[in-house]
Amino acid sequence: NPNRGVAEIIIGKHRNGPVGKIKLAFLEKFTSFENLQVNYEEEGEAFVTE
Image (cartoon, rainbow, N blue to C red; front, top):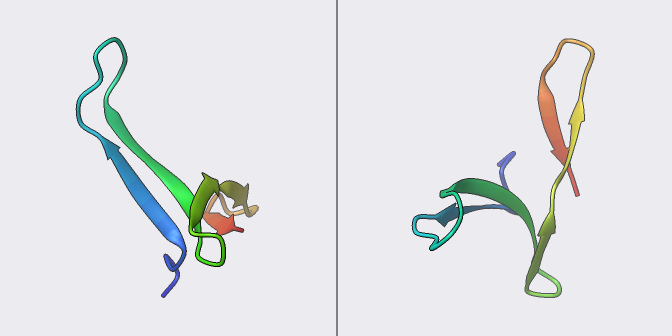
């Protein structure tokens, strides 16, 4: 599965800020999340590296 280790966080309500969705890398070994590093190929397709 190409999305293994990627979590989508939904911010549905925020008192003084925007709502939306973000994707984070899930580090199973540490049971934690961190920012994704997104790389772009020459054709313009994005892929994710951990």
